[in-house]
Amino acid sequence: MNIQSELQATVQALAQQGKGILAADESGPTIAKRFKTIGVASSEDHRRAWRCLLLAAPGLGEFVSGVILHEETLGQCTDDGTPLPQWAAQQGMVPGIKVDAGKIALAGAPGDEITQGLDGLAERLDAYKLQGARFAKWRAVYNVSDTLPGCLALKANAQALARYAAICQQCGIVPIVEPEVLIDGEHTLARCAEVTEAVLHAVFHALHGHKVVLEHLLLKPSMVLPGKAHAQQAGPAEVAAQTIRVLRRTVPAAVPSVNFLSGGQTPEEATANLDAMNRLGPQPWQLSFSYGRALQEPALQAWQGQAAHARDSQQALLKRARLNSAACQGRYSAPMEAA
Image (cartoon, rainbow, N blue to C red; front, side, top):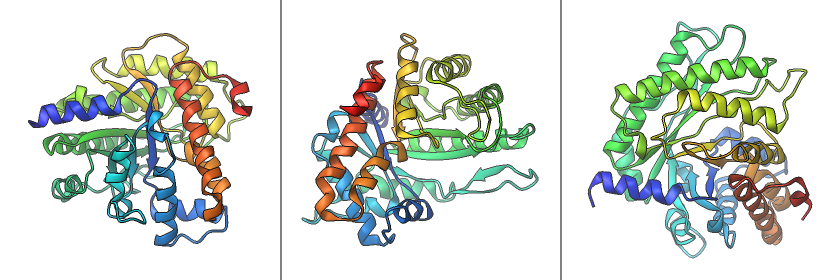
């Protein structure tokens, strides 16, 4: 199979109607923070046990087409010695890998940040592919204020995302492009829409310049939301209308799937907002999810680090995956939360 056929096969496996992607690629500090909420130390054994539990949830592949793994997880095995990427594939989920090296301050642009990790990326991708990874993810973050992000941040992050995507496709790995407009702050819904439009415009301009094949990538954007400290929050209908408006202005129809990040929303909010978008009618791209905390949080609270709670934890994960699958099809309703 040539590289283009390989990329197309991976895209088709990921972009299945009614399915989304589980993000289980938390960095060390992030997963430590989440484990702290249930009083569990973030040891390698605990991280492996948690991620094994997630991937072993029976029937998860009915609602989840792919899973983004951390580099540590990519090299781990189940208790019977099965490599976790292989186990995910056996469950019907395409294994992927987070490849960025995190954010740092952007020199010359106070308040803005840039993602690092391009050095040696092609060699790392070749190794990850041998371990079973078929797609990758790179996250860029944008702080929002009356003046942020600046022009330099828009351009620098777009170029990094485009270079990453081009390298991935060259290696036969499908890139997930993740430009996250952060929810932190007091900004309005309108300001978020303005920033998101500028971010996506810059990203697709850069992708075009780097000759990235749009049919062979997935977009993982944030929804258009007011800052969490803003006095007036938005309901699902307003979030959906503003998000779709921005996407239709900036995202080419060639992109097969838009898999939203949850970005600080509660599990219920992330599901309701996705559902509201899919109720607006057919769009040029599939609208789905690539949630981390919004899928995992109820399962984590049920687990509490106890093997005896594994079944309850998996049931909590399956419930959220099932509800988000319904949201992908515009079939979610609030009473389903209590079912």
